[in-house]
Length: 365
Image (cartoon, rainbow, N blue to C red; front, side, top):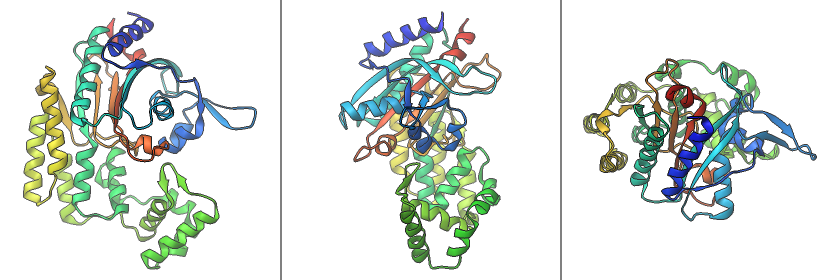
């Protein structure tokens, strides 16, 4: 099956399930992707300018353009979308122009059921285009965030712990000095060193205000100030008890039922309330089973996390066992913060996934 045929087959499936096909413009505003995904994405985008000098880029992915379209047409009302077409991103060892297909569910409040639906459609779609034995890997940013919050860490320390985990370096990264950031901002860090926290935060916010900066990468001036405070005070360390709990959590793996049991035991023994996140996790597993999915074949890993600020809960990827590079053929997850970053007045629940058709085409032959 060619990649074009695969798109047609997937779109037919998704439209049958109520996900209307959309095709956002290929040219997109570059700053939106940089603000939300960080400067790293700029090095991988194909960037140009319009007549006024504004930066534009060839569409590097579909999710952000689909969300922008949704905000312009539906606001907070629920809707489902499917898509298929070219995206453009510099990738070592792979082509810079390639085809993607996928679907996004925006605005639905039945979180667990929608998560299970997206995964179910991803697997059904793979089967339709010739890949029926993909291996499913699950993670849960909601569980991770709930655990870090329950440990009572400061907001700055919580963010640094999350960054260390999603970077793949683990908790050992917390002891590494942020040399580049310290050098770039040495003057400001020296100015706030030793000040009372509230006074230092107000000082940084004043500097940002003078510079005309309100938000960067979805973060407010206050949040940016807290990050500077964390660097100045070197708050990256963890107490022994918190570190032990996190290390135990990050060692959890197995099928979803085994993982839930292990997390519940950890929460009980550590005296932490993770009931809301765990209830959602188990409810989602129940909806997966109700769709006929073999959850015992799925692999949950507590270390599986996404390096984007807007992912808030369930994440997954599907790998082809015949590939040796470990790259997923489908990836997706819940991103309830994204639409608020794009201008929504309040968080709007959303979840979706994308198919890397150039990887699938070679695998399914």
